[in-house]
Amino acid sequence: MSAASSVPTFSGVIPPVVTPLLADGSIDHASLERLVERLLSEGVSGLFALGSSGETAYFTDDQRVELLRTIVSANAGRVPIIAGAIELTAPRIVATARRLIDVGAQAIVTTAPLYTLNSAVEVADHFRTIAAAIGAPLWAYDVPVRVHSKLGIEMLVQLGTEGVIHGVKDSSGDDVSFRRLIAANAAAGHPLQLLTGHEVVVDAMALAGADGVVPGLANVEAAGYVRLWDAAQKGDWETARTEQERINRLFDIVFQPKGLSGDATGVGAFKAAMQARGIIDHATMARTVQTLDPDAVGRIHGILADLDLLSVAVG
Image (tube, rainbow, N blue to C red; front, side, top):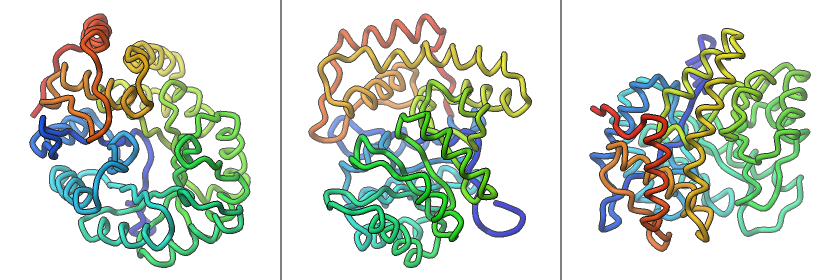
């Protein structure tokens, strides 16, 4: 928490928590508890529940509450938790967000409206409506690959200046735009905390002035990101770059599945690697999402072996 208020500060390494599932597709709470403990033991500074890596779109509201309750319990107040309320429009987001806040989310992150066709003015009012109704800090989630619209820099900074949003989780993959957002935010007095979700250029984004990173790959190994971020904060850019290059070799796991959807490829690779390391018991995907074939899993195991990551001590 910040000293000046009860608004949580999200900076450093904040993994988007993967959702472990049992073979029958139900939530694997035991593996989820182990995962949270492992992330905390490796030094993360926050947790992002119910994001894309957590396959949140595939779960009911009741399941989302169930997942968050386990994450909150396992965390036991050690780091702040931000939760994704990803829904079609503001009224549905508000209803979901309130349930998540009741369970223990300290902040909410959401996207522009889904399915609807809105102007920039309407998107800004979408965030204003949600912020006024939920009673917790709101963050904007910029993920145009899923929402099909990009959040504008001027709008985000204006919403930050108004106190409507407290930060941005940038998963646009547009590093030019993110650099421009960092500069515009600094010029406005830094009203926003800015987190990059672009896992393979964290060293560069830290140098540019990002406040933190939300890396799905940290579910496989968080310690490398923590070492990278700590080195960057000390100005040790050589160590940060070296760690980034090692992380990027690990990130090659996401290129091993072929011919599958984006959800199956990325999260599937994470889960296969997590199971291989003993972090979760099953690599089961959310219902309707394809699983990886044995050849892809074998190649993922080979990458882990090359990096001496085929086992991990978990609580």
